[in-house]
Amino acid sequence: MVIELILVVKGSSSSVATATVISTLLNVEQQLLKPEAIKQLGRLKRESVIILFENQLNFLAALRRRGFEGAVLVLSSEPFDMVKARHSILRYGRGFHQGCKYPWKLSDLLEKINILKPISLGNLRKLQSQLRANAEQLNRKVIPHYQNLQEGIGNFSQELDKMEENFNSLLRSTPVFRHLPFDPTDADPSQIQEKFAEIVQQIRKSQQCQPLQMAHLNKIFERWRNHVLDTGEGW
Image 1 (cartoon, rainbow, N blue to C red):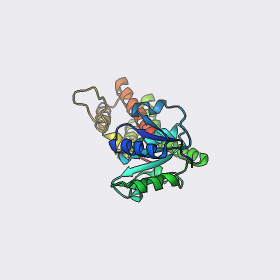
Image 2 (image 1 turned 90 degrees about the vertical axis):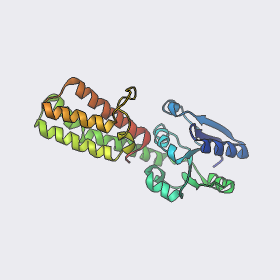
Image 3 (image 1 turned 45 degrees about the vertical axis):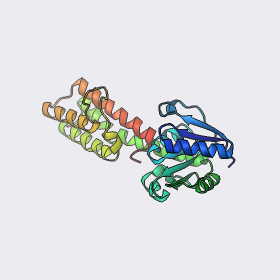
Image 4 (image 1 turned 135 degrees about the horizontal axis):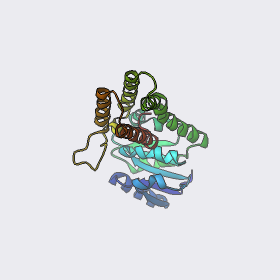
């Protein structure tokens, strides 16, 4: 692949410094992406490489979901095989993702860069489908019980129990999400998992659903769906 662009996400001094060195040596353009702007990005060059520190891999799902076909170089403190074992998105296809373990050697960086290639369109489509399938778990396992509670269909206690059980299962698979604040503007915000448990307990005690409780549950569910689509967590 003839590289035309080196991409890097703002927030990691290691990845930014590495991208600057690589782009200078290869004499190719470098583009700094702001995390908050990734969802609004237009089409990026196919012949590009994005350099990410491991803790920035949550941005890769958002980029792939929006059609990014470029290759990926991951910087980490562990061997790349161990990083891939933790991140399913890096195991999709061959030759599209490489990694370098700290301390990074320039020769190793350049070698990995030179063997990278863009993700094939077929693999990109399969990956996008997998991200959507991950999010669809919510529609299959949780939303039917939520709707039954809202509409007064079926056995109230059983529907509440199933909604709680199934969503807690999704929360266990997404530890980053479950620890996010429900309302970041609060002085002492509850974590999402705590807020969910609190609402369910209130409904169980009163044996009825209040509009505000259902609105809060809907907010939690929608945030979970958007989070897994954009980060790939839980896949």
